[in-house]
Image: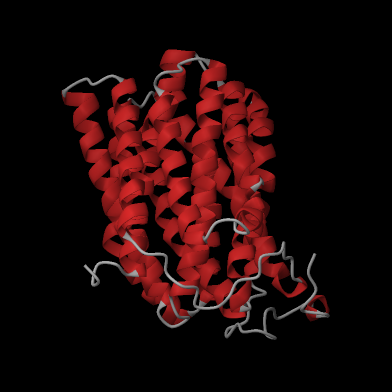
Length: 397
């Protein structure tokens, strides 16, 4: 039993539980809201903005950690995620979906913030890229399995939305209960700062995080919605598309992590952002459903490259800042995410092409910022230019 009760095993179980619930919700959401609640672009934009509000409030993680251990908080957040997903099918109305989405999102965002902190604390700088890639691969094979079962459930057995949401949510809650009961509370490798921290020398990481959140919303909200509204993809087809995406991550995420560790964060992020500019411009012009599907898969392939942002921060940060900074970075990531879906939902009604061109603009901003990452980032060597912003590096608010 002691061989199982290790931090890595706990992180693996967490990487299984989260996609088990979230990806069932994500795969069925667009079809569910269109078929059962008659959502259009404005309603889906409002729902997705509400979904991101808990992410915007993720900085409150530091206050919860005054009461709970990070590990306990992560498990409780998983249980809340499962509960929100389990209830979704029971409320096929506009305000019912807003409620269950916010409930699910509170659990999801708090969990993701705390899991990032735990991962960067429990893995050394040398092993972090590969191990983060491994956890991504575990999540991907879980997602692939979930999408396969969901495809069979919807396409072969015609199981109703309600039962699919309920099953996924309950299983996530059961895994959370197992993690709560079966694992001891692991000690902190470095005592964590419990205050709300914004350090000037982390400014480039904050800026990259902001544009990452803005750009990701275009993919998560509008690229997926385009597949259903413009090209008429069914739940089974969307599920199959997601399955291809996660098969790639399962096969290559750990290798990508090792590759990032070898070539460095700046080169990896440069490749990601150049590719994303091309993808978003193509989204705006695509008229063929098969080309759109190919772009969606290529877009998702770049997600694994985001490991480079986490390892860049791990290299420049004080180890004591991991917990507090994880919540703050999630809030920064979601500043744009709270506003963009609703605003671009209105733009979508007028021009879906313009929505994706705006996404290309976000990717261009990220590309420019990424060129400021040193080849060997470290405390005191956080950026190449604008080093005056590193004055008083211990400043916090």
